[in-house]
Structures are given as C-alpha cells and as structure tokens.
Image 1 (cartoon, rainbow, N blue to C red):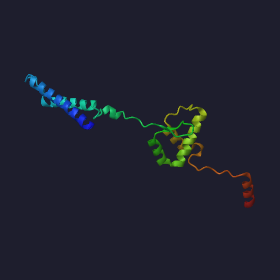
Image 2: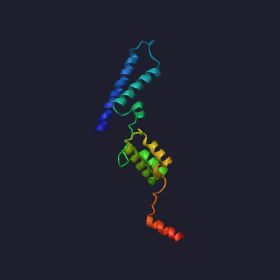
Image 3: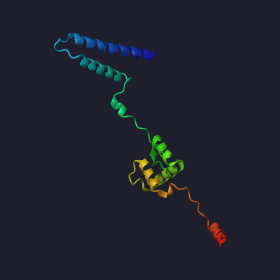
Image 4: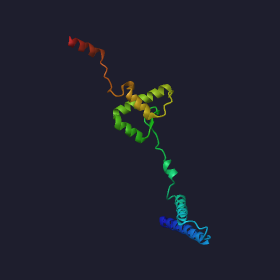
Length: 158
C-alpha cells in the first residue's frame, strides 16, 4: 500500500513539473522560446532530480563512491586485515594452508615489531611473504628428527 502512495506522490510531482514546463513554454515570447530539445533536457533534468530526491535513482557520484567492504581481522593478533574478496582471491591463488601459514607469519612479524614497517596493504605483504618464502610458507612443516632416531638411522645405514 505504501508503494502505491509513494508512486502516486511521485506521479503528482512529475505532473506538476510537466505542467510548469508547459506554462513556461506558453508564456514565453515566440522569439525567445527555447528549442524543443533544450526544453526536453530541462524536463529530464528536473525529473532526474526528483527521482534522486525520492531515493529511486542514485546519482553517478554515489555509484562511484560505493561503500567499501569491511576488512576482517584474519590473524591471531589482529594485524592482518582482509576483505572477504581479498581473502578468497589469495586462497584461490595459493591454497588454504599456504595462505594460513603466510598470514600467521606476517601477523607474528607485525606483532613482534609493532608493525614498525608501517604495513597497510596486507594483500601485498602476504604476496611478498609467500614469494620470498618467509618462514618457509610454501613448504609443509618440517618434522624434526629426534636425537635417538638419528642415531638409530645412522647405525642402520652402516
């Protein structure tokens, strides 16, 4: 029901604009009358501003200034902040385990230094961490052989 009322109100405002334009056109001196294309452009501009004021149409500037996706803390200490889109793109590119290890390494380095490096673009920092293999992000965790196992292995090898 509210939609019908809003549409009726909008329709009345539009007819008022059209009526005012018609009155203006009749009252003008024939020598001063604007070409039809200019009158039409003025009516369209008035109609567009009416739609914007009613919240039906959004100005181009509002479309260009889209609200940013919120950045979510992705690490234990909260330094690494990524949007869902950034996180999923990194995950597709590197895989979940590599990404999680890189996030952990970057977060630990930022925590240790208080982010002295001034990192803000966490996507780039994670790319660098994986590319430069900080803390062996790409390789699986290394199993450390115990002293006893090493002696037994050496003994068995001869």
